[in-house]
Image 1 (cartoon, rainbow, N blue to C red):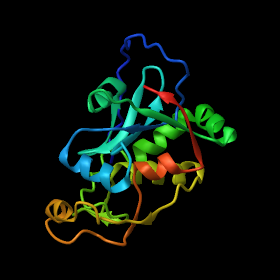
Image 2 (image 1 turned 45 degrees about the vertical axis):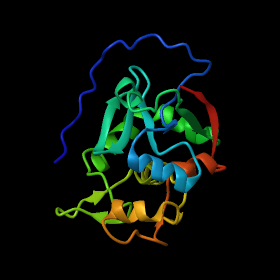
Image 3 (image 1 turned 60 degrees about the vertical axis):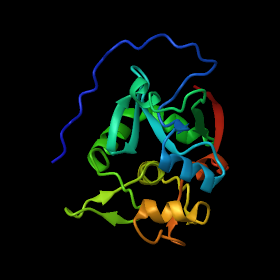
Length: 201
């Protein structure tokens, strides 16, 4: 049985933004690490990680890294590559965006019940279970399945390739990469017609 997470009510530093963040906004993040560079070069994108706004006041983000979890925005943003910014994407469907604001507590409860605490999937496999038969998830997979499950919005998958920096990918997977398996990445969200960029943080 999952523990209910109590979000601490702490005042965040005042941020000057030209737009208002909303629950469900997708945050594409550039990160500085070895595997991040592999992902970015493979996908021809500056983004190797992503999360989603789950609460606006105070600002909290969900992501899958190490484990599927809720973090303060400051903790999430601490991983952003120096001199780079986070891209904020929003669904084009205004009815879906409005629904998420109206049902934000239900959305949080759905996340906590179905996703929170699941293990990170280092193998980037779309349907991958741990030793307890619980699903393991990577960042873009988690956001995709969350949107699909709660809203019925299908971001979609594509056959994955690991042909750039091949030897490094073999080292990462400690063997053969999952060539041709279905999956997705932050770049899929970046390129998707389902979203538009609201701004940068």
